[in-house]
Image (cartoon, rainbow, N blue to C red; front, side):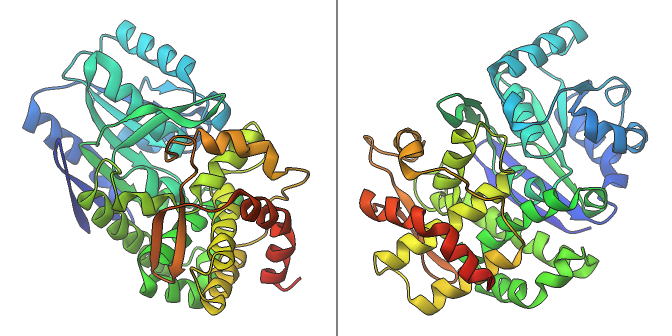
Length: 371
């Protein structure tokens, strides 16, 4: 089974990624328990994930944690402090102690919330991720970022808290709704743009196969994406420099999610719009050649149609951008592509360019799709 090792400030952990990896879960979690002392496991998941995979997970995970999971809504609208308080109180009542292991089973929302719970509960308990969406498998389960939203913006409260183990089973994607699967592909495109020209070219050639969930194509892009993220987070765990490239498309994407109340866009869809906008910002400021910008725009568009922006205007999210985690003194800092496989972080773009480009974005997206 492919095993990718990640070094963090709190030690080394492994990402086991393969079709059927879940069958190894019991042994891997038990090994973790033996290495750091006997522990009870507590499974955190969502009702919709548990309806599909609960029976499998009850037999795949050790102990009684999977027989009595803590379930919570995995929509972005409930990714907030009240949910964290509710879960931690349930852990107290269930007798979770400092030796406990929290196993997060679900997509990005479950992983972000469970990770923050693990970081905060009793000042830190062990964490295992079993990601069930493409976004979570290639991105959010790796690197230790946890957090919840505030009305003022996304992921503004959280912690860097690496897991002890990640189990990535491609089979768990088989029941993922097509829209959610496509949403995850935008994050894969991100890796090709920011760091991996080989992955980018593969996506250009094999996107139809990926949209059919071809097993070989899917295995290739998931493992490549994980390796890109592994390299970046090992070089810069706490986002002091290089790790900022992982935010390509996210500055605007998070603002779009927040300004629409986390109800119009799936995360990857908002990032798709954000990557298009960032590419056009780079073009407007002479940071990228038109040929490279066209390739990036076409690849993003090839994933499929994005939900329309509707009546959103740049003025609606200017305040949110100024409060972004990456802003400095109210100055919005962007991640912009320089060419396929290379990006610049910490870039400033004059507001008139941001505003005009956003107004032109629907027309540019339609041009990229050939409509």
